[in-house]
Each structure stands twice: as C-alpha cells, then as structure tokens.
Image 1 (cartoon, protein in one colour):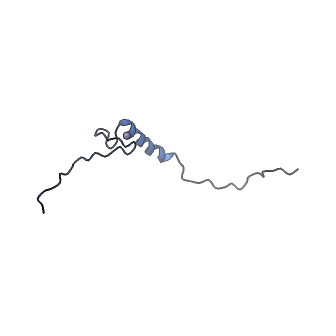
Image 2: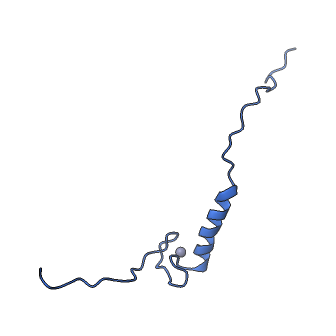
Image 3: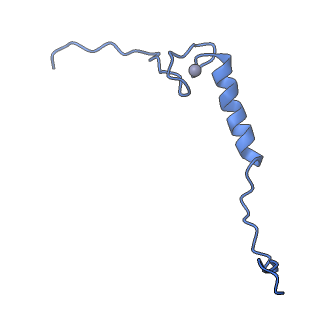
Length: 68
Ligand SMILES: [Zn+2]
C-alpha cells in the first residue's frame, strides 16, 4: 500500500446523453430543459405511438388485373 488514495469524485460530470454537452445539475443528467423534454417526449411518445400488433393479411385482395 502506498498510503495514497485517489480522490473520489462524488459528482462525475457526465455528458448529456442526447447531445453530448456537459450536463447541468439542474437538468441532470441532461444539459438543458430542451434535452430533458426531448427525452421525456421520446418516452411518452414511444409508449403508445407504435402498435405492437401486426395486422394479418385479409386474404381478400382484389386481382391486380381485370380479365376482359
Ligand atoms: Zn443536451
């Protein structure tokens, strides 16, 4: 043991996950209210935006060409 300990940074600054800018403590972990809002909208939007069900083929498609 060397007796020396590396100082532990209690608050490591992580870059904004959206734009990579230094995050602000006020909007942690984002850099600004905009990025925080974007992330929030992403969560809310993805919650009910895309339906998980796939529509089955009706099997009643009209023929592409009409017979004379
Ligand atoms: Zn940002």
